[in-house]
Each structure stands twice: as structure tokens, then as C-alpha cells.
Amino acid sequence: MADPGTDAFIQRLQKLFPRIMRHLERAQAQELIGLEVRPAQMTALIALFEGSPRTMGVLAGELDLTESATTRLVDRLVNMNLVRRERDRQDRRIVRVRLSAYGRQLVELVLKRRTENFTRMADRMARADRTALLSGLEALNAVFEDVERDSTERSEAPVDDHDDPA
View 1 (tube, rainbow, N blue to C red):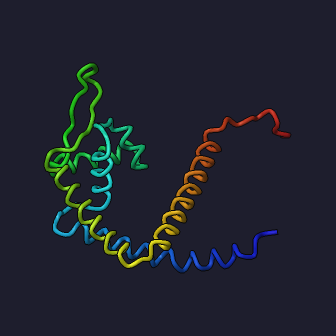
View 2 (view 1 turned 135 degrees about the vertical axis):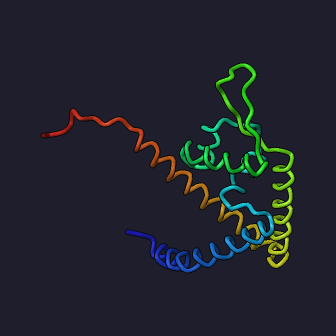
């Protein structure tokens, strides 16, 4: 039998989730005002900011995009002078993507805006509420990752045709 509190949890979550998404989308739009960068582009720039130069395949995996979609995204970022492509010194067939100096400045500006926004929100919350929020978000993220991992494992599992009664 299902936990009776689960239904109430789901109903509250279904009401809150769209509202929270709207607030986050609005905050993201404010972060990008005047920068002429789309949210998906900023996600790629932040991924590059947080690590070393990457191959297109690795970046595609991080962004959960196909390599062709990632290549088109990177092409636009190269044209905007936000990233650079560079060939591997040992294997010239390997191309890595890295932030340009301008791209790094842009990410730093957006992260500064984001920090200011989150600081304003945190200042309006009690410390216990902030702690509870982080615990809840970490738990939710862990569930998302478990579900994604289970889904990936099922899709990669070999099919056993020997048990087929047909």
C-alpha cells in the first residue's frame, strides 16, 4: 500500500513545480539581459568554464545533446568569439573546445549576477529553511540521477531472445 502522504506530496509538487520553473526562467533571463546569449549557449559556456577544454563528444554528453547539435551550438559560440577550437598536440584529429578570454569574462559576469540573485533570495529565508531546501534539492537530484542511471542501464542491457516462447 502506498504511503498516504505521497498523494499530498505529489499534489503540492505539481502546483509548486511550474511556479518555481517560471521564477527560475525569469531569473535566468535577467542574468542574460544585454548579453545576446541564449540559455542553452550559457549552459555550454558554464560547462566549459568549470573544467578543462573538452572534445565535442564529452561536451555533448555533459549537455545531454547529440554531437551534431553540440557542433552547431559550438559553431555559433565560435562565431560570437566566446569559444575557440584547438587541435590536440599529440593527435591532430582530436579537436577540443575551450572558452575564449571574452567567453570567460561573460561567464564570470553571469555567475556574478546569479550569485547576487541567490544572495537576495537567501537573505529572505531563515537559515533552517535554506538548509531544508538544499537537503530537499540534493535528495531530488539524487532521485533524478538514479532514475536516469536505471533508464540508461535498461536501454543498454542485452536482449535475451532464448526465453521467448514464440
